[in-house]
Image 1 (tube, rainbow, N blue to C red):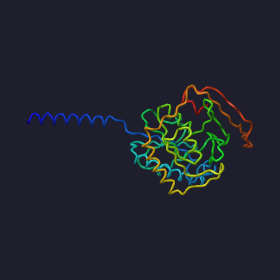
Image 2: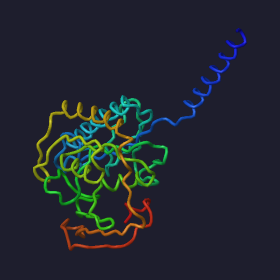
Image 3: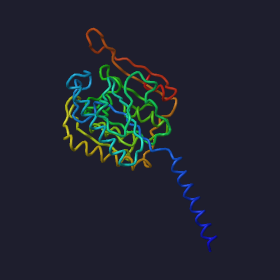
Image 4: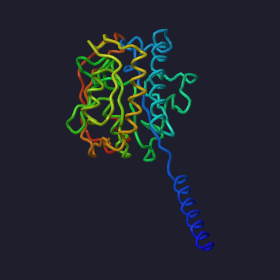
Length: 282
């Protein structure tokens, strides 16, 4: 009887040890966030996004930080163990001392790649503060890469904006995009490219390119937090967004007169993009 009991104890100890080793060997659940400024709560005009460190810009960056922090809290509540935030706006927006505990952030330029440090170890991508692609009638501050030269891009015949660009880079590493936040038009665009399981949270409704119906901050931050928790649960249902390589690409933009700062003639470029590392360099 004692031998049988001892044998059971040994077996139980082995099972527990194997279980602990498996837990220790398991990679932490990692989420990569890309941010932009135009789609943040309270942002609706270019003077908030272009004039770095001007009062309107400082306030807009603070608005964005609160959006980011609400999302980070929701992701961690939903099970994310590591969260990395990439400051994706051109003149940078992250305010370090306002970053939510539990998230690291990448800021400053230049960088080695379009989504610095992203790889197959990440479980999901989240896009915060996004805007719709150039030419979207109800898209608040809509543009694709450059609002001044009014760039437009087509990949394999499909016109695409920054939401699709970011999701495609993540998709190259088999990472699904699980959440998009911004205005109603950006959320609509996110659902179109990423499917119904990708969680979208709108913080405003566009009336024209520089006018919007803004939603109360207390309500948008709550919605962002709850949406991030739902997004974590949706990871198994979300599929990576993939572009067939090589990408048949087309770009249109206006040349700019540097002295008069006026739009010039419409230019077009076409060609093949060999891999995702070069998609934003086209």
